[in-house]
Image (tube, rainbow, N blue to C red; front, top):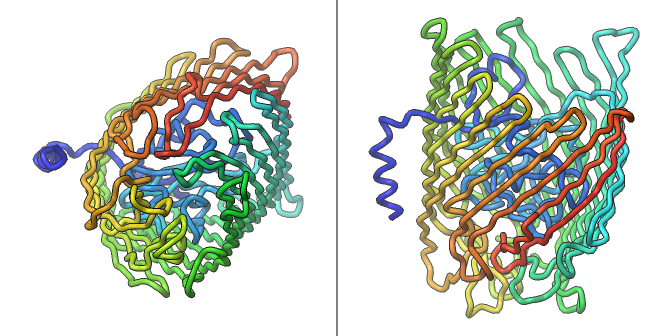
Length: 624
């Protein structure tokens, strides 16, 4: 079936030059008009806040059609974010120009202690843009930018079932400099905490986050100095193992980041660059059994230092150079790793020239051709090729069509848990023979923009070689083992948005088909690489019912690939419903009633790990 479908895909190539890949919005207006996009800023989901804790950068991504979020407890507790059928370790998280790396495991990639008010909506990089801007993320990157500070503030108090409670305060001020009126200085900070007994037994959590930044900004530049701290304790049955035990995690994350964004050059042909430097520390304490913690527990302390640069330098209206580079050094102290594989240096540089041609007053063609180089002090280096062809047409007033064809290669190396632990015993069995992973992506796509609607669609075929997967054998005493696998993935995605007078609707459909080869016997189940939905549908609605009442609904239906470890159904239907009342008599006051998992689905997003239950909450917020 898979190879027959691939043959149909190849035969359709000449007829299928339609769709676009997802891409971030870079600083120059010219570059923004020419890069590929399947990103719909701020409209990928109806809701933007969770029900069972405070908001975080990855909140509500489980309903985002561009990614597949597989959670333990809830998304804000443990988020494995996958893109286009990859696994969580194939997905990078980028803030400014820098990809945030966790050297131990991709389970901690999404530990980002930044208040969402400080960041732009996430853009999803795939294909050429992931190869250009991503680092050690072979399939995709979730990218955020730093927002300009706006004077505002809020205080929130929330309660819910399962003894849930939440408190949060956020504030920002900005002052124009009297001696330099073109410049302003801003300060922004927040503190958030929440706790709950959990939506199932032994699924409790205690979270808190404090973050702040100082910003210096002008018309053509912005500099941010940020510090964030986050502490999370949570429990969940079968959190990582299928042995019917109640496991816990205690995670502390600290992040210091300095970011500078600069535009330069003549108006109409501006260039831009962004420099980001960060220090990230992530400490975790894992307990296999909360009833018997001495049976097995692990401590890990990781430190990462990184400097990154990206931008576009336009030499003329017809030619520019896109570039990105990042240098990263990490180390880990662990009670479970062996030998001397406890530090690594990463080097990445990408250069992709861009050629732009105006065919007539309404049509233009953009061609990008270049490459990326990746290396570490412990692994073999690799040079990757990237390129795309983009045809943009203005089809009417406030209407356009964008077509593209692209090919991109990207690469990454496995984390320490996969390569640095015991290869013969233990709960999590490593594999010190793992090689550099290589991904090759061929894609066709289109975007159609009208005044009141937008449609983005793409069809892709991806070759993943030596992908590191975690597998299970019924004859093994380990919870899981790291094994390489070669996978071929065929995918199709469609995202549509329609705006009405008093409502916005976003709908999507995603199709995935995989063919895998582990090269060994004894693989009875895959926790990640083969844990994907062949069919997935999302439907979001924002209904402005009255001047004071707003209703937001996100729905997701999926048919998951059969897995020997999964208990219960392979299908699931989730809904997240929010009702907001803003009384006209009290300006700035909001009352929010919300429910997640409205139908109380118990679908196992991670095979063998119990699914979340239903969560209700009521939150009062005062804005100023």
